[in-house]
Image (cartoon, rainbow, N blue to C red):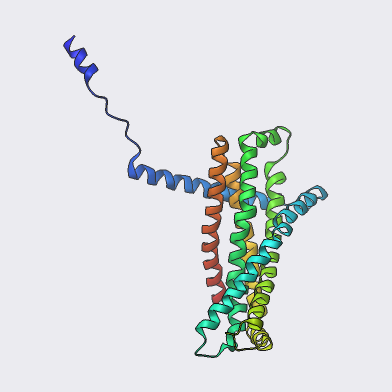
Length: 275
């Protein structure tokens, strides 16, 4: 009896968590699982791309949502990026020649700032919407309903968004390049701190920019578009846990997109320098 009472009165040790190594291992496994699912969705989407009339209608709908609806925000952001570039560069070049302002703005917009800023903008605006939409469908069993009706979820959901994003983002990059360069020309024309004319600005720009620079930016836009769609569709389709799960998937989709954009940006720049 005494032994039983001693056992009953003995404090129960609290449940231990997984620990540091367990948390790291779980994070690594989750990351590998996401990478594997992303690879499956990417190659599965490529295999299912069929330009049937029905899929064309869905692609056009996504092009409007991803591309056309983003144009006003793209104009505003690109305009002020180009203006800031001229102001900053002109301030640094006060003791030197400001004639190179055109090449600085042009190369920065076409090769780097245009593609990266547009990718961030589209990932935050359209990518998050894709993850939230597919996440809500997964939570409310709409994905299973599509399978029940013998409709392939990748063909119906992923393909239109993939094609639209891959086509729209390079066009947005080109649009951002033009607007950013125009924004720089506005500052050159009206800012008294800039001592060159708009003609000098444009002459220097056309002298240094070639087709390869523009092409690199467009290639970046296409690769970034495929990356954003693949990541957002993957995290959207694997959503679980109701509204909290949708919020977590949306946040993770945007974060993963930003990280992969920077990684692929480095890889593309390195390859472009080599070739």
